[in-house]
Length: 286
Image (cartoon, rainbow, N blue to C red):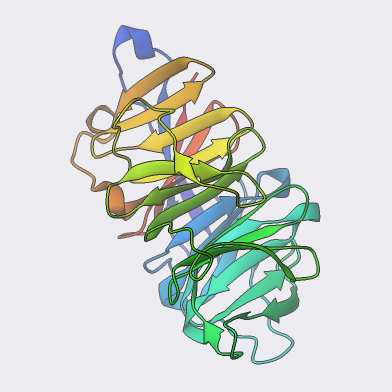
């Protein structure tokens, strides 16, 4: 029997932070999450999790109930080491399936729809590491073999390229996100700084939206709100206003940012996934 239990953890924060709460969606299914690598929030608030250790994709609702699991179908359909997930237009769900060097497309019900490979000039399959979608239906893919960021259109044709042999270097990426306000966002592993470029993958530049020289480990954006995670703090930027929230005050213990992934469903609702134990935290931040 598949079930998840919801444990409420009410956290007392400083007066300026009144109203903040943290819920933990603790996985209690027969086959629990094992080293999940990433997640994304789709249509209707469904949360899609790349359950890497179990070679599958699962979808849960906002109460923690499992709704869908990745279906089988098409060519060699079972996932092998899925490491990132993104939402496209019309609720489509994309998974970077690194073990088979491909990207798999699902419907919002996790019905298999198709797959594509990222290829070099000699048609060799490259490993997709990070993916992000935009409302127009484009898919942004970072592949680690040649260190490049590519933009695919609805027909999976490459329409823009950054890094690799393009002459514009982007370094090694550890995060990838998209918002209409900020464009394509990522973190450079070498300096832990935030970078951006437009949807056409024009000249990239460093973004000091969270403060000059701010080192971050994870980022996500929804509409005009930008969230960042550093070694000890969560940050939220709206316009020129930046709020911060100490991680220690939420959990009362040290959590390593490299073991966390963040996504937001609104300016007030932020989710944090602990990859080490598969726990999904929901933070309400008024």
